[in-house]
Length: 84
Image (tube, rainbow, N blue to C red; front, side, top):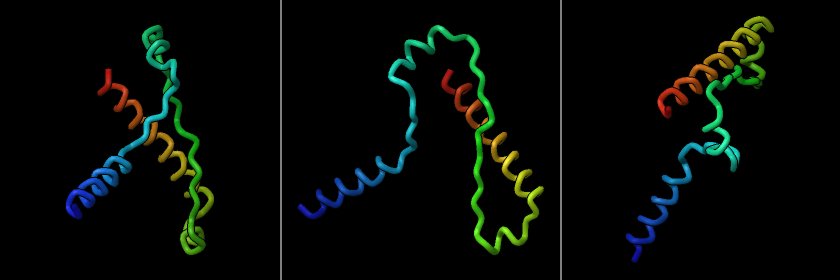
């Protein structure tokens, strides 16, 4: 009985760790009508610890924020390409 309960708990833990993909309830219907999709860079907010913020200039922080936004955009593009 204990092994069964442990197995169930492990299964629940693994399934809850998966990525969540949020999409509209009408996504499938709308997606069939579109031929072109724009993927905009993400709006990124970076929070640093006090020691980290002392080491970076505002310019460095903005550059890091912009690079992260474009990296997310590129990953989303790759994900869409693989799914199509």
